[in-house]
Image 1 (cartoon, rainbow, N blue to C red):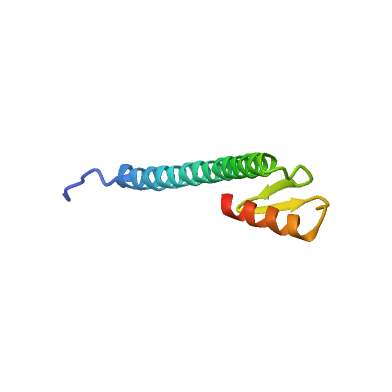
Image 2 (image 1 turned 120 degrees about the vertical axis):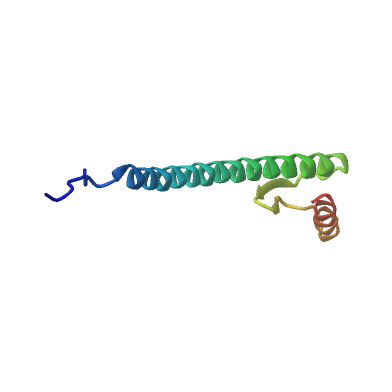
Length: 98
């Protein structure tokens, strides 16, 4: 008579491999989401600080006509300058702060 052994497939190895893949993907997605949140948050901090610093410096120098907006690392000045010399001075001052 032939030796009959239990020939059930060993599925725990496959389940472990599947669990490893799922856990790896979940970890990657979590880290990616955290990286996106951190980059968005830091961009907001940079924009807010840039706007505040340029605005305070312009006001300290008497450029009350200039309004500051930041979009990422780009700082824009808007407003009507009394003359071309003041416009140029405000742009240089803003450039020196950022």
